Image 1: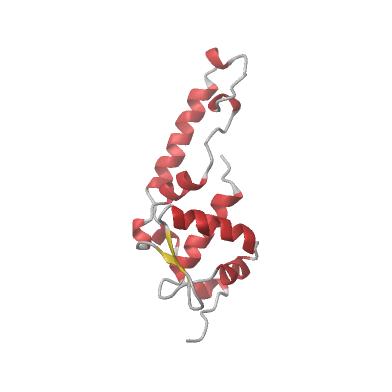
Image 2: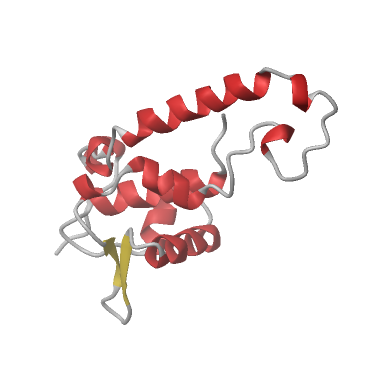
Length: 143
């Protein structure tokens, strides 16, 4: 199982927002903190806002903030929202042309493993991931 870069960035942006829950954060500061592309992070932020994980405030003093408390944002919901599919092998996809699919047992085993993965991340929420930003050298801007 491998999550896409999009999901990785989504989780990072949510963690960054949760670590700074006392204020709005900007795409620029999150991109700088993680050393990732601003343009990619903008797409991620738009998706997370559209799906109700983040709220966006426009304007000079605007930015991003969590749309609900970190404890109310399930990691499973985020992953399901950001992953395009969970077709980890060909037979999981719509374009299955594998000749042994009808008699193969691998599909069932991998389906069970996927369900176990999703069940485990469903047990956790964003608050489980948040630590003191100073531990990562992320400083809060002066008020």
